[in-house]
Length: 177
Image (tube, rainbow, N blue to C red; front, side, top):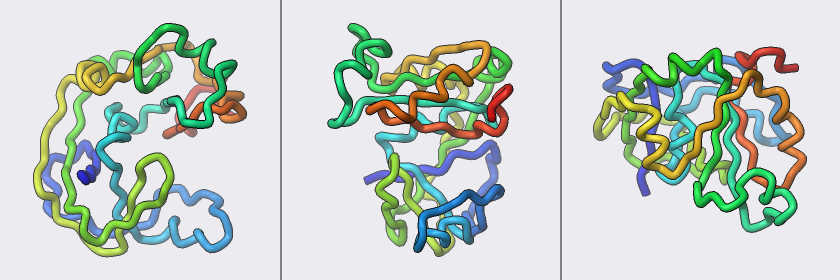
């Protein structure tokens, strides 16, 4: 198993646990997820972080529970693994952006069983770092179709479908409630 942390900082030699920047409401017994942690993403889900810093995005993918009536309007005959959506306001940053992918040792990380997220309560020293300079190419190589739209707000109802829905940095989306 491979775990990664994405950053725009090229010089990280050690990841220290820290609380999330904006705490979110957590289920009872999971409040500790707002506390000091090192966050990582597993290899199959890393495409969720191949975006410019603070870019609002919505990614959807099929699960074993996905119903045909939810799948057909989004995938049709496509073979993509994931469909990602961003706003046109972020297109130029997406086209020209880059990010650093740090590989972290899996020891000490625990699986949250939520879209590939893992956390550690202990510091982690990266095994390696790679600068990814072609975000569009990296997404394509991972089977992700990128869709660009004026606003992400029309997608708000998707979390009520049987597709998996991941919204990241939505506080930065235009007109997001």
